Image 1: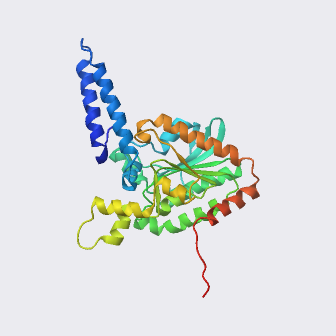
Image 2: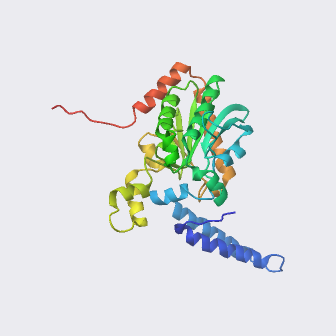
Image 3: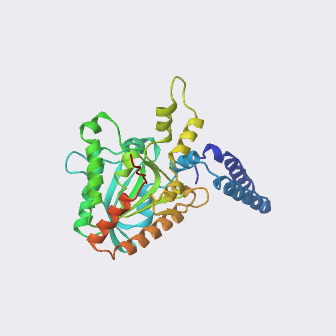
Length: 326
C-alpha cells in the first residue's frame, strides 16, 4: 500500500482516495458502482502516464528518495535464497548502513553488498539514513575479497545520499576507506555488477560502483553531489534556497539514468513499473534479477585477464578532452 505521495503526485492521490472511498461505500451493500470505479481507475492510469512521461531531473531525484521505494534488503529477500549476512570489518565495528553477505540468485552463488537506508525513524537512525562509516566500506570490501577467493560474482546495490561526514568517520579514515575500495575493486579478479536502485550520491556511492556492468533503475539518480548541496555552494548567499534552486541544480548535474546512458557511464536502464519501483516491488525485483543474470552469463566466459583489461578500458574511456597545440 502506498503511504506517501510526492507533491507532483497530488492529483493522483486525490483520485485514488476517491476510488478507495467508493470501494468502502459499496462494500457489503447492494450497490453496483463498479463502472464508476473502472472509469476513475482508467483516469488515474492515464494521469500517471502523463505525469511520469515528462518528469524533470529534480522530480526523478525525489522518486529515487521515495520512502516506500524498495531497499537493498527488499531486493535480497525478493531475488535471492539462502542469504547469509556477514558483519564487521575486523578492524573497528559493524556498520548497519551497509548490508553484505552471501546468497544464491536462480541457483547461482553470489556475494552482495549494498546500502540500506531503513524504514521508520528508529531503523533509519540505526542505519544512519544509509550513510556508511568507513567500517561499512571495509566490510563490503572484505566480502568482495571472499567472492574473489571463491570465484563468485559480486553484486552491489547503490542507494545512499553519500558517505557519513561526521568527525568519528573522518578520524577513522573515511576518505581512505573509499579510496581503497576504488583501488581494490578495480583489480578484483571476479565479475562485479552494480545497480543504482535509488539515490547514488558522491564517493559514498562510487565506493560500491567500480564494476564491469553498471545499471540504473529508470528513476534513480547518480551524481557527484546532491542538488541541494550543489545549489548551496553555487547560489546560497543571504537568503534561503528554494525548490526552484534545487531543480535548477538537478538539471545542470545531469544525474538521471537517461543522462548517464547518453554519456556512456552506465550500461543499461532498468524500466520501472508505472509510478515508480514502489508501485510494484515484485515486478521491479524480477527486472533487476533478469539484468543481473544476463550480465553474469555474459561475464562468466571471460578470463581474469580479459575481465580486468575490459574493466580498465571501461573507466578510461569515460569523459572526453581536446588537445590544442600551443
